[in-house]
Image (cartoon, rainbow, N blue to C red):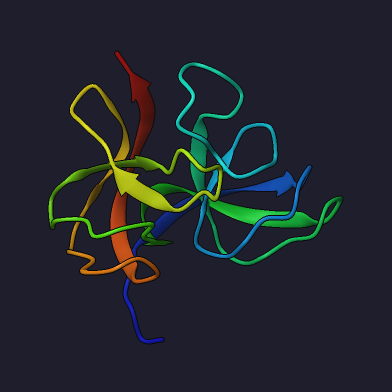
Length: 121
């Protein structure tokens, strides 16, 4: 509560799987994964939870709050966690979909992330 972010664009997506709030969401309507170059790439971050068949607003522009899957340093590249949870994990300069604007010292913390086009080298 009280955390800041700068939503500039959003899209409405129909959930094809249960989606949790503040998670990376893929073009296929499920949580985004670390898989490269597929419909599971991140399109943005969910603003709220959604059940299968429900719609969810997905932030696609500038920044959003994302739940961390593990500790993440401030200014680190981030990508969706490999476990399919849609949580933020540490990325690299060749595999990322955003950059952490603040640090997460433990899993479960919310961090503001600048959103980028999902990149895989």
